[in-house]
Image 1: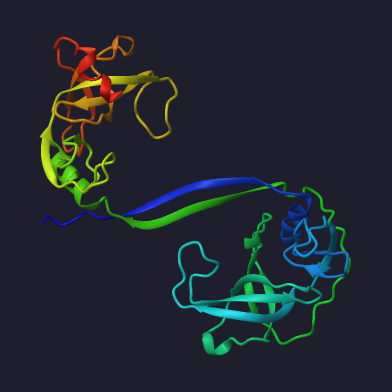
Image 2: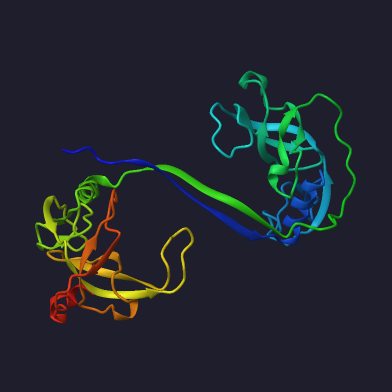
Length: 313
């Protein structure tokens, strides 16, 4: 059996969100090297602050200034930091109850090793050199054996408050298309298209998924299809996609390759966009070194009869 393909894959996008007044004050305070908590009606101080009491669900908003020193309540050693984490050398994840706070804040502790970390140890904030109003304005915590920090009540009123944040969301993983699609991709490298036939309903699916979506049974019999096919339906794209070097307008279509019982996607070229139509007969156009057809163009054959592809719409 041919080796199943696999490759590293990263999905990344910026996540933008607005901030409530409490969150705005907290992050703006970090920019100003101030840590704010919120006081509940029964006198508890929550850090990081929230808009509603987690016990009573009451709305809360009284901001108070807490210390930049605190006590480790629990911890775990991170021996292999990953991209985007606070430190690029081994460190401890810690929950720190800051002085004058009643809840703990999660962050990194810069320590030489796990033997240097213990529950109950005293730590203090190490501020980032550049601060814009984000949790990363706290670079990390560091061991501390000095006096408790003095605090004063702070209403959380700052000039130029932070009203929104942009976080880069990223997921790194290894993707494998599986046995069926590995065979499909390998065939494309030879400028062929292969599907798999369901042993029950006998339909041929391209690209194959390893199972029939209708019958739910495994598929294994390979069937070569195409290369020509029929446009079953299409849309005209009028908005240029970022990083896609295709001039608009252009046509993107569902194409039923000859011998297939499922239409696949493809761009239509070699014909004015306003002349593309259902039933148009097309063939693939390959580029040098391309792993899949660059686009499909008309074959010059008469259009397919509607009854020959109506079940594939």
